[in-house]
Length: 504
Image (tube, rainbow, N blue to C red; front, top):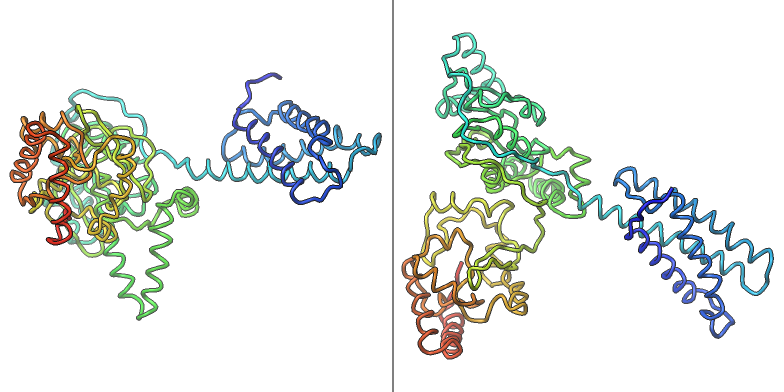
């Protein structure tokens, strides 16, 4: 049956055939001075036989990841046997012009290389195809509670409070009671970590949903939060808890004697924190552990809530868990598959208001980019225009920021022409909104730079930072960009070397 082949598989086989031939010539000594000229008819015939046989048995049809690998490896073995029988064996039976052993070795090498490339390809697909955290969300208009809120009967109220206390303790129950009306019929509790229970919640019937299972024990945190989001009315509330990275570390170090506790903690961190974040091991970790007992930072959990359409209202650590109250403010948007490797690409405002991608090394916890408004409201800005007590930055990130290691990938932006050496700092749209309107217009007319005027003037507050940038942009328009950038460059170098100017 004819079908449209998947060309990447055809290319994989062609690479296997060519690579196998080169390996044979390199490994096996031949007496012929021009083995390529001698063997190309036989090898070309074998290649055509392999490709034609592969097409006829359906090797080049689209395959799923899980079943496709087993099917592909079996097909390769069948193709190998058929190709040897159809092409290589006749040379052994009917001619002595070619070395049958060399042809058979070539066929075997082709099969082996093809198997290796197939395995690597499926391993890559398996690793790069994590389950989607979010599902398509249909936009909705304003929604309120369908059923009018009323007071639950005393027996139901007592049962609800007892249920919460039995699962999470009295202190947690009292904190939840202070942040929600447990006497209302519009409050419900989720008791397990399966997203299906949230998926079947009746829409707009409850204004508060309480998750008693810690989020670090859930495989699909974002999906659970998304289903709850869909069920809540406007301004509805979710209350959840998590055992954070710092709490888990403290428990492990206290549980075992020194130095065994540090060894156990290191192993626990590598398995439950590092493996879920690495590209090549993430999917395998999820399949083996169901994603439970991951080590999650508080920053990541807060960021996930904001990512899924919530606004953080309050949080408090009670015992081994941190409890969070969040209000629904929007639908969870669909994003591309999220990966958190060592390098990141940030959306920044470039010349002409065009969005550019600025490359940096990761210095923040996952999902930190969704916490900018929350951090600004809670902690405001410190001297230098940075956030005061920015919980988004991890320990390694602070070190890299101190010595500008995180900004080295920005040299790629310099080569691409998105940035110049000296210029105003590339800002996100959210941070840019804090600037005065006239300065925003001035910024849009120039290209951002690697070395901002900040290092020359060393301002301490946001108004001072704006004034510093306004002065540099004015000088560029009056005296010329090249002359101004040259003067700023040497002032920046002096301040960095002798005044230890830093932006952290």
